[in-house]
Image 1 (spheres, rainbow, N blue to C red):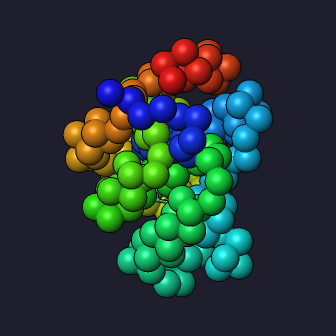
Image 2 (cartoon, protein in one colour):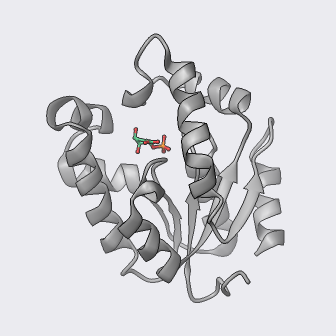
Length: 171
Ligand code: S3P
């Protein structure tokens, strides 16, 4: 059963390009809640962009920061939270998210994800010539783990408004 969302944070998980930040912000507006984006919170705490954290400190440091930020956010009043695509892969973070939040996997097909991530080439994991293959691998690798979320909502091509409505209906 899906935990009642009224007293919980609603956390969006899923791959880069799924629309977690855009959908999350609109969902928060509709619910009259605060919106947090874990990537943005990490950037604020570090005073660096995600790309610069990866470049200067490496992915492992980024993951440690990500976990800390999520621990802090999950201690705050119920809100809507967009997590970075890799956050749910960390076992401790996943356990904490499942304890404190209603988790929603924003799923999309590979072509949709690929089209969206190309618009804004800011993701350090995709700054390479074989980026599409990398995304495809992450998709295959992570799908069974994202599928452990409380709810699955498909983010289709086109405007994000229908995805927001699908979440509101599913909650
Ligand atoms: C990552 C996803 C990114 C960001 C970082 C790593 C991942 O967040 O946290 O580049 O491992 O999937 P978005 O999913 O918001 O793009």
